[in-house]
Length: 99
Image (cartoon, rainbow, N blue to C red; front, side, top):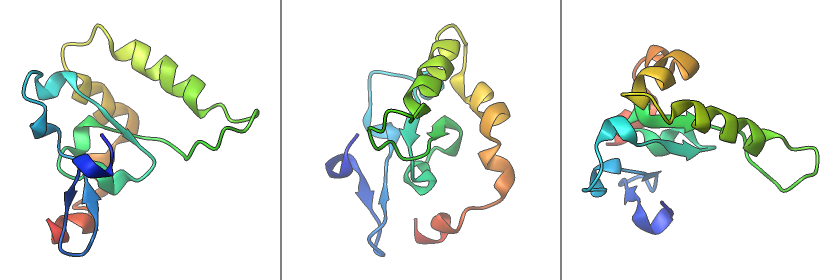
């Protein structure tokens, strides 16, 4: 999803909303972004990454591929994301004030 596919809040924050994907279940979808607020509607589907700048020493995409490969056979990717990233444990994100 690109910015054109996002919901823009009144404050100009762009949120990705997986509900626009009608032919898949939430348990099978992930959002990968370096801005965690972008998956504010579906925090448990989010996979936060550091920005990738095409540097030869940058290993972020290698780690992402390994993580995504591990999700393939899971019944619900959100369960693994909860364990791995604990984003729900951070409390109510400030972004929710804008939604």
